[in-house]
Image (cartoon, rainbow, N blue to C red; front, side):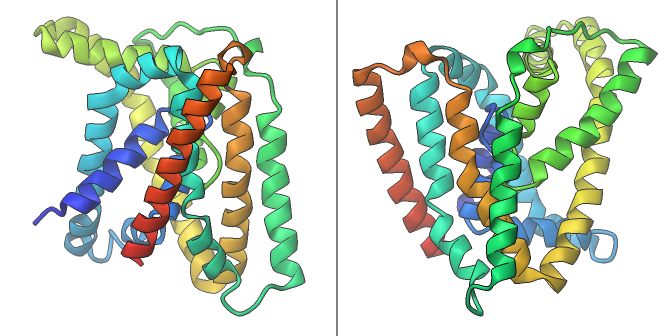
Length: 286
């Protein structure tokens, strides 16, 4: 039986993954479901039924979040980027206390502090890259396009599965975010009006990207699961540094003209509400 709570968490993660600068995996960590998802993915070959039961509500929720809200998020991020970003910042940072407790479970050490600082600096430096220099690319159903999108899908999955690093932000830096988001939206528009030939053309372009994401998820999940099993405290210290750096990446993506006093005040209220909600939600789930 599908849990509404797990479906809702999946929706939030799915929506977060299509927002540039917002890390869906950091949000998963904050809600206490990240380790569970990683373990289920790596354990799938041995126990497919049990893993599928764990992953199914999150997968359905994430797909609903992406499919149902991609148009809305595209609109909100274009017209209300400060409010939308601060809302997700609160959702992410609300889980910091639970991550911190896992990172320093046996007491803080010099190694833990170094790993946390290194992870923080990594995302901060990545966030400093200027995505505006990337020119929009043209996506066509061709072999050359597929050969570009397949490794891009692997890279996107790797960045999406590492907490604190936004896969959408990386795609934006490379100039592929807007073309891919437009293509996904166009695919669903064509399906809605039963324009199957155009929908098939869109699907052919997206297919190698989707395969790359699946492979990237599996490989990165194996690596992270091994790290959590053998170096749990250090891994969570690294995750803590990545999560704490997320607001920098998010704020740098917001155009300066949206930083008005009314916008900041209302945005801070949304941030506070989502922060309190995640603190309560993550505590309830642990």
